[in-house]
Amino acid sequence: MMGILLIKKELMDLGIKSNDYGNPENIGYDENGVLKFFDFGDYRANEPNLEKFLILLPENEKVIIREELKNAAKECLQKNGIKKTTVDELVQRVNISKGAFYKFYPSKELLFFDVLNDLHTEFYAIARNVLRERLDLPLKERIEKAILDTLIFILNSDFFKHVENEVPYLLRKVPKDILGNHSLSGDLEIKSIIEEFKIPISVPEEVIYAFMHAFETLIIHQDNIGKEYLEMILKILVKSMCEKITAS
Image: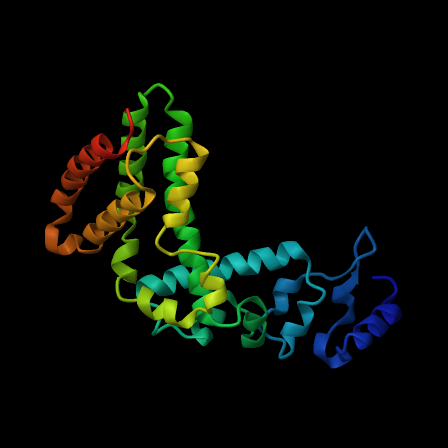
């Protein structure tokens, strides 16, 4: 590596002491002259002051760590739920320090909030794909398939079974200014789909939101209904709904 003395000065200017980063050979400039860390993964969790390195961490590495945190949160959600999951468990799964975690998320609740919003986006991407690609179907049938495929995916993912009692707790913990720009109910996704595909509806949008909430409630209680029957029930209800809510 070149310019080690200069690099050390830049680190000192950032308040990072030499014993914080170990071997200076792991630090240098890339081809664009940007100060960065090399082989960063080798000592993610071993450095007591790892959070300081995030100042210099390349953006692609930050994206990777954020995605790893989300994946760890998904696993913990299904295993323990939100309340019982600790930050210590999350950082152990991702192999980063606790201090580094708080550079990505101020709290574990905000991480889980991010995860649940991503899952809603993933679910409704299925509806978008059907509406975009199945142009061979009449509009009403295409809407019906988009809704049903989304619900069947949710049913098979077991997502709602794990968050039934967790969402109220999560909403109490997430700051109101963040809640104002997001929705865990999927209403914003549904509104966006209606506008994007110019779907003609004969009822207020709120009625459609209520239908989707009712479907999600059925999925949450699938064990009481019987999963083998629920898919058939959803097919009947979705077909009936589409007959009532779509304009001719």
